[in-house]
Image (tube, rainbow, N blue to C red; front, top):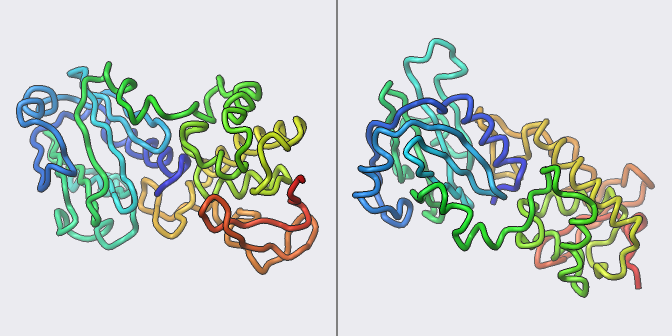
Amino acid sequence: MPELPEVETVRAGLERLIVGRAIQTVEYDTQKSFPNSPEDVTAFLIGARIKNIQRRGKVLIIDLTTNYSLVIHLKMTGQLVFVDTHAKRAAEKRFGAGHPNGSLIGDLPDRSTRVTCTFKDGATLYFNDQRKFGWMRLLPTIEVPEIDFFKRLGPEPLQNTFTRTLFITQLMRRKHSRIKAVLLDQSIIAGIGNIYADESLWAAKIHPETRVDRISRPKLKALHESIVSILRLSIQKGGSTDRNYVNAEGKKGSYIQFAKVFRKEGQACERCHTTIIKIRSAGRGTHLCPRCQKVVA
């Protein structure tokens, strides 16, 4: 599943391409991927113009001029592919985002295409999903923040309101839990997954298995700063594919080239030169430096 930086790069890329375009037709192959009534689609999606694209956690929100929104979750194998054969610039003819299989560059629609949105100017947005776990839901814009999925999400780590005080308050909701499990809990902080949890904990010199209430305030401050700076760097570098995701131009994200610990097991820690190891924490493969990151008893 993509993490916050991957979805943010998708959002930014598609924002440049589809905002202002009007939707002419929508076709879909399964109600599971497109769980919307035909009446709502006709009344609020067909003919609507795209007003804005937002991100909440790992989910995209396309706001429409009808005061409805398309809420899109790519899940594990989802893709959004924009095609405009009439574009004058080659870079604007095709942009893909998501699971990097042949659908990003092949002819569409194909066997994995679940939803096809055709714009009035002839351009097309395809939602592809091999495993059919992703979805596109059409909802009144005012109701989007109130759906259960979003109400359970924690604060956005890149907003100005994500202060150190708020961060610590959120962590203390699970103060007896191991820190990595807490960082992966989307109700505590939205958008952080395995890659950026490992990277942030290494930067703050915190062992993933340390209980939250055993971490000193200075280290919690360092962790807050690390999360924000690492997420921003990853967005700047186009996100990280983590083998499965590419950015909005169909290119692999480059952050993984700058990773300090993730998938670096067997290599030397660049800070202390101890060999990086891989363990299991919070049910996930977890990378750490056993010298820099010691469990606090």
